[in-house]
Image 1 (cartoon, rainbow, N blue to C red):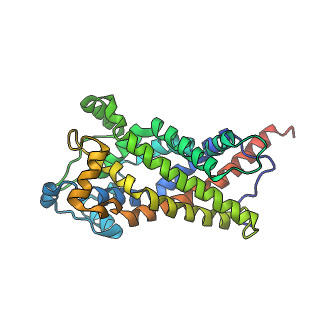
Image 2 (cartoon, rainbow, N blue to C red):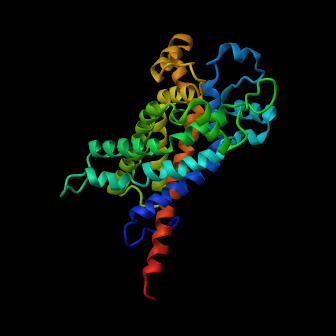
Image 3 (cartoon, one colour):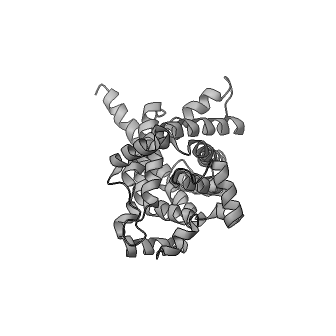
Amino acid sequence: MVGLQPSERPPTTAVKFLGAGTAACFADLLTFPLDTAKVRLQIQGENQVAQVSRSAQYRGVLGTILTMVRTEGPCSLYSGLIAGLQRQMSFASIRIGLYDSVKQFYTPKGSDHSSIVTRILAGCTTGAMAVTCAQPTDVVKIRFQASMHTGPGSNRKYSGTMDAYRTIAREEGVRGLWKGVLPNITRNAIVNCGEMVTYDIIKEKLLDYHLLTDNFPCHFVSAFGAGFCATLVASPVDVVKTRYMNSPPGQYHSPFDCMLKMVTQEGPTAFYKGFTPSFLRLGSWNVVMFVTYEQMKRALMKVQMLRDSPF
């Protein structure tokens, strides 16, 4: 047996909400450099003239990370971490922590199992809700990750996380903090379905067919499958979202305009720029998050049961 065993009582919504946010923050701490490398690879090539003047050209995941460490220092890999953690505490808590509750809400009364359609609908709902609440933190995170800190190509604009929120609101209006919210809702609805529904189904089948027990190996396999599916279906939307949210005012008229310019200037393969770091990041993030989340739920329920116990 690996880790804590399931509690006698099912986890409450509050436990899932807190556990999901905490687990997502832990996963972000471990995988943030991969996310930063993914963002740099995704935006590379969008400003052809500016790229010529920059000495830093990124090739592959490891090459991007090494180039950033060499030219900007190791701290550049964690640029935007504060906004990233703020994002996860609001974003993951909603889309992951509320998934089971929304799934139960959509499940017809008297039904023992939720259908695929019900699970997809629940994933889309919680994903859209989460983006609506957490969009400003995502905008700030991407702006920090995309900015170069030192050297001739330096474009560092914000002195800190709170300064970024203020500057964006002042220069682009409050709507600037929700820039790219529509492609982000689309992206996260897809990602949430890829992650939550895939994890839910794989875990359920592994348990139903008695291939694994409800412990670490089962959670690991389910999370790895969820990460791959989510990356495969969401990568094109993710690239468009990253470029649109990072763009200065006027560069793109809309997310659709951004998509068209990518196709005409760089070809359809541009939609899968940064796929490897995306998978490495999302796959490892899913494994760390779901394994931690399952243990957090059990630990928090044990604490709650001890508090409720009269002895």
